[in-house]
Image 1 (cartoon, rainbow, N blue to C red):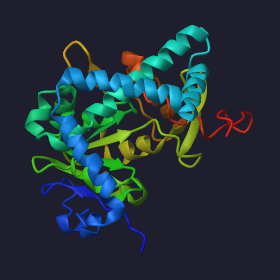
Image 2 (cartoon, rainbow, N blue to C red; image 1 turned 135 degrees about the horizontal axis):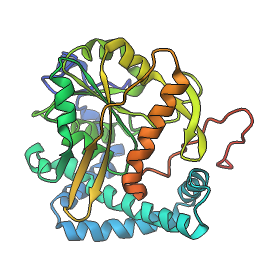
Image 3 (cartoon, rainbow, N blue to C red; image 1 turned 90 degrees about the vertical axis):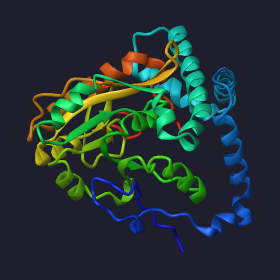
Image 4 (spheres, one colour; image 1 turned 180 degrees about the vertical axis):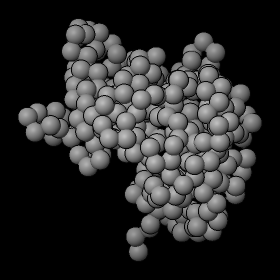
Length: 328
C-alpha cells in the first residue's frame, strides 16, 4: 500500500495537531531493504561529531566530485547562470559554478549536525540577523510570512528560527526511512513547529493560524507550473513566480519578511538574515506582487551568490515563446 506522507510535529505546534496524526517510526524500517540506509545513517552520526576542519575538507572534495561526475546537474547549473547573468563572462560564470558545487558539498557534509545534535548545540552554530523585524511584527498580534529561497543551507535557517512557533512545508523523500529520519530532526522536542507535506497542505489552516503570532516559513522560488503563477524576471530571465503568498498575506493580514540563510566562513556560523517587510503588496495586481517578490529574492540571494541552489530547474515552466532550456 502506498505510503501517504504525514506532518512532522512537535508536541506544541501552531496548528494544534495531535502527535498521532504525524509521521511515526515503523518497524518495517528494520527490513533488509533498509539496511544500507541504516549504514549511511550510522556514518552520518560519525560525521556529526567529527572536527569542523575535517568536515569542510571532506565537503570540498564531495563538491568537486559532484561537479565533475554529475554532468546533468552541472549542465543545469551552467544554463541557469547563463540565463540569469547575461552580462557575465564565461570565466566568471564557470568560477561561480565551481564555487557553488564546493558550497553544496560542504553543506551536504554538515547536514548530519541537524539530525544528531541537540537544539541547544545547534544554536551555537546559528545566528539570526535582524530578528527585531520578526519580533516587531509579532508584537502587533499578527502573523509573519518569512519569504526565503533555496540556498545550500536552507535547513539551518529553519533550525535557527526554532524558538518561534513555525509552520513550514517539506517535499517527502522516496525512501521512507530517510524521510522519517530527516523529518524528525525538523520537529525536535524543544520546538513549536508543524512541518506539512507539500502535496497535502491545508492553506486554510495556515491562513487561520497566521491571524495570530505564528510564522510561516515559505520557500518562494520554486517553479511549480503555471497554476497560481505569473511570469516575471528573475535576474535576467522570465520565471514562473508563485503568487499564492500575496493571497495568503492578504487573507491573513500577515506581514511578509524576506529572509535568506548562508554559511559564514569567518564566524563558522549559519546566518539567517531577515530583511525589512515587503510593503505595497496588492490584493489584485499579481504581476506587481511577483515583481516585488523576485526583487526581494534577488537582493538576498546576492548576499552570497555562490550559495544559492543553482542546480534546480528554475526555468522549467516557460512562456509560450521560449523553449525549454535544459535540453532533456
